[in-house]
Structures are given as C-alpha cells and as structure tokens.
Image 1 (cartoon, rainbow, N blue to C red):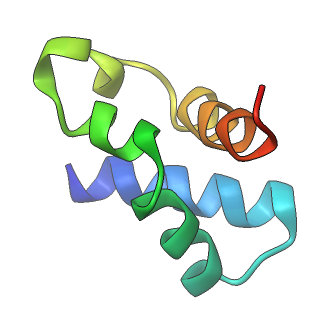
Image 2: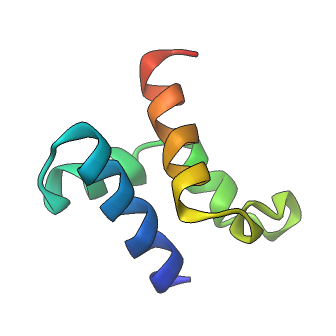
Length: 62
C-alpha cells in the first residue's frame, strides 16, 4: 500500500504545488485516505491521479 500512497501524495503535491510533507499531511487527514485503506471500497484499484483528484475535490468541498 505504501507505493500507492506515495504515488497519490506525489500527484497531490504536483497538482497543488506543495511539498511532499504538506501533501502527505493533507492526504492522511482526508476521508479519501480512510477509504483507500478500506479494502471494501476497492479504491486501491484506481489510478494514483484519480485518488489524488478525489482528495483535492474533498478539500475543495466538492
């Protein structure tokens, strides 16, 4: 799972122009992170960019 989290965080950092540390903080505070770690959601089967977009949408309240 660490490889998936790393890819998602890198995508968040790139899209929002943040450091890796800032992006990982945002990711771990998100509901999307909880969903990613819940095998029942199958979110881990989606691309890193898709999951990053979900985190960003969550942050924007969409």
